[in-house]
Structures are given as structure tokens and as C-alpha cells.
Amino acid sequence: MSTRISAVLFDFGGVLTTSLIEAFEAFGATLGVDPRLPLRLLAKDERSGALLVEHEEGRLGQREFEDGFAERLRAHGADIQGPGLLSLMQAGLRPDRAMLDLVAEVRNAGHRVGLLSNSLGDDCYAGFDLESMFDAVVISGEIGVRKPSRRAYAIACERLGAEPGETVMVDDLEHNIVAARRAGLAGILHREAATTAAELRALLHQDVTTAKAQAVQAVQATQADG
Image 1 (cartoon, rainbow, N blue to C red):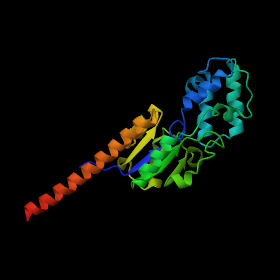
Image 2: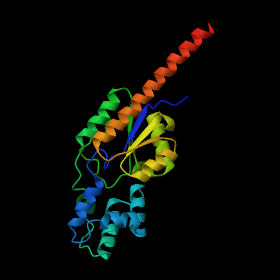
Image 3: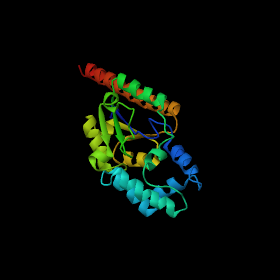
Image 4: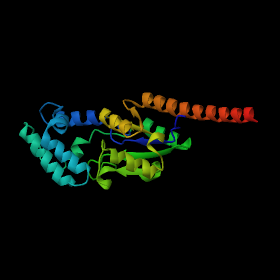
């Protein structure tokens, strides 16, 4: 018997907002170097990656991350100082209204919805009333562990009151979706709102349809036994 999906976890940056990758590239373009330098350093430079992990897990403050990452950028030819670095990196981000509407739609349909986000800076959620939007809000810097750690997904499911097998994760990073599936969740790789909405609605509708069919079969079996 298949498990019905009853809960949805949403990522924040790049899912409820416009593309994080595009924002970082736009920031990189202002530095007079390869626009993909910030992304490349965060993904492949050992020291930059360590700074990001420590910051997202709440072990390194915003100022310390900014100073450290600015030093790595300068080492690769960028003219940048630490103070205000994260604000500049995220300046291109805007709320994705279609995705915010999807969160409300799913919740209004009776599904539990949660946020599971790797935090980046002290003000990255400014302007979003997360507590009113979600049944559970799980931020990496507050729980001390980040995606793609299995523990992050487990904590989010626990706070949402749903088993991993009953939950789907919506994220814009493929490795986070791979990790979610390994943790027992379903996963939707987000690229744009219309496609994500269609995939999520189909998944939720399919599970509702399956549950109804199973209920009918159970009644029929009982009647046949009688």
C-alpha cells in the first residue's frame, strides 16, 4: 500500500524568491571578474565552502562570513570588502508571487506546509511573515545543521508532524533533492513556478486518488466477505 503525501516542505532562496544563482551571478558581474566567480568559490574553493557551511549552521556570524568570503574573492581578483557583502550578493532577489500563492494553495487544501531553509545572513527572510505562512519553520542556523544533512530533513518532518514518506521537498538544488529522497521524502526539483505547481498538484492529486481507491477497495472487500 502506497503512503499518501500529507505534507510539503519548501526551500526559501531560489524557490520562494527569484533565482539565487542569477542573483549571485549579477553580483559577480559587478566585481569586474567572471560573473560566476562567487558561485564557483562557494562550490569548489575549500575555504569558501567551509565558511558557508559554518555560517549556515550558525557557527559563524554574518560579519565573520562576509570578511572571510571577501578575502577569498579578493584573492581571485575582485575588489570587494566584507561589510554589507551578503546584502550585495542577495540584492537581486525578489519574492516569487506565484510560488507564494502555491504555498497558500497547498495549505488551504488541507496539507501541512513547512519551510526548510539554509540561512544566509541575518536579514535574508526580511519582508516574509514566515510564521503565518507555514505550519513549521526550520532554519539551518537555528538547528545547527544544514541541508543536505539527513538530520535537517528529519527535524523538519518531526516539527511538521509528518513522516518522511508522507512528505515532499521542493528545492532548487539537485543535491538537496537527492538527499531528501535518500532520507525517505519525495522530491521536486524547482526551476520555475508553473512546472513546480503542476508537478506538486499532480503528486498530491495522485495520492488523494490512490487513497480513495484503496478505501473503496477496502469497503468492497468487506462487503464481499460478508
